[in-house]
Image 1 (spheres, rainbow, N blue to C red):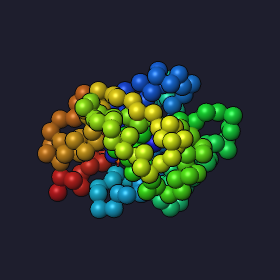
Image 2: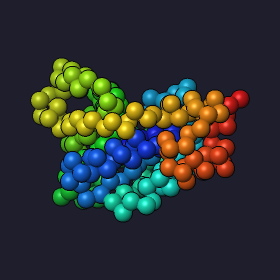
Image 3: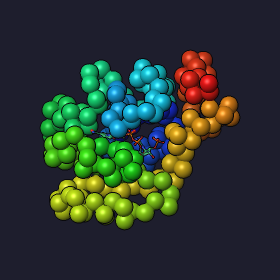
Image 4: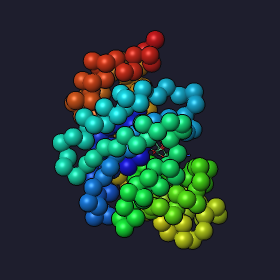
Length: 198
Ligand code: NAP
């Protein structure tokens, strides 16, 4: 499960659990991105803060793990390199990369798209009301084999978004019940999004 997790929220957690159920996954490994590509000009909290918030959010689920692979790798966090890393760890495993459907819409612009499709299949988690025809529209850019490796998954809880949470923090509004309590406390204690309030 890849994401910037800026910050992680209940939508991400419900999406991960829904994917685990729907695709009968043994485990979901959360991979907070180190230096997210495509994020120039946006406020992205420090990678260690995003890693620790993600750790706090997943620690109570025995099927959830977290990886530092992108946090510890220098340079932009290219998914192609991450998927190659996991594939090499165990080529016998069928790896799925779970992320937001809107992120996957841009997959053709990602670094080394062919390598990406060689090493994993994709679960595109979408918000309610999201038109899956957007994924179908990728047909003009991807071959039928690649398109067949993208699996849409509607997750009503993804009505929560990280940008909505950052806006609420900026306006000093409550984020209770949108993120796990430990994450809420971590953000407050470490003033993670203080720069937004200036
Ligand atoms: P983003 O553009 O910030 O997010 C696009 C949409 O997807 C947002 O609505 C976002 O909601 C949602 N989303 C993101 N991660 C999600 C997740 N794990 N589960 C459900 N919804 C999710 O996306 P991003 O976080 O930067 O990138 C997503 C993943 O794609 C990351 O692992 C990133 O490294 C990878 N990526 C790779 C490349 C590349 O290799 N060149 C380029 C772009 C993205 P929230 O804001 O609420 O999360």
